[in-house]
Picture 1 (cartoon, rainbow, N blue to C red):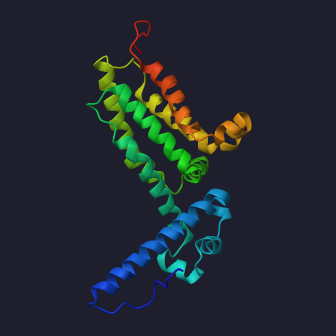
Picture 2: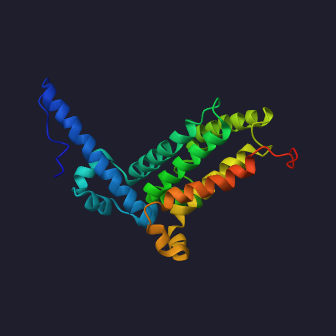
Picture 3: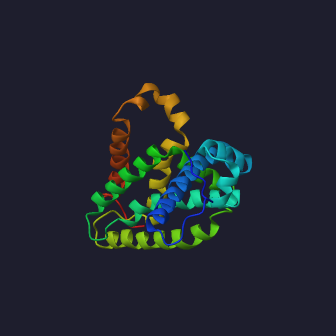
Length: 226
């Protein structure tokens, strides 16, 4: 049961304060999880606070205590999604073996898309509409991080540890391929049928994607510099 967040907490009582904080955390999580489902299904404009409150199992006034406006909920959901996605990207180790690092990133990125397809579709929908809610994030933190990892990949190229490819297009390719399996899950299921229901489907998919992409960046004599 969702607890009323506005209930007074006796000052100076640590246990009650901790309990209130815990309840608030639970309620926020309920709201954001419900919002992800609603926004991914109906988009920002087609969604309402009433829908989110109903999905979260709480009253609209209680929801508005945590998030005064629908926009606040939407931006928070998007920021959480991006933060989760960028974790594996940030963890790419410049000192590691390039093929191992890229293989690990491809696998983790696909796992995230598979586990949270709603988040991937929500992000794709936001991008298709010009990304008005996250433009600053994309041009700021995301660009800085991509530039940083592009420099890592460029260094691997200079050290002749991978083939001479454009680092940015490699990153974009990984994003596009891994997100395809969530953004176009209906199409994938229509083509592959029951194969998508097999327990090891995503494990096999990750291996195939990694093999295709990594084969393109392996050092070979027949690849000329860009």
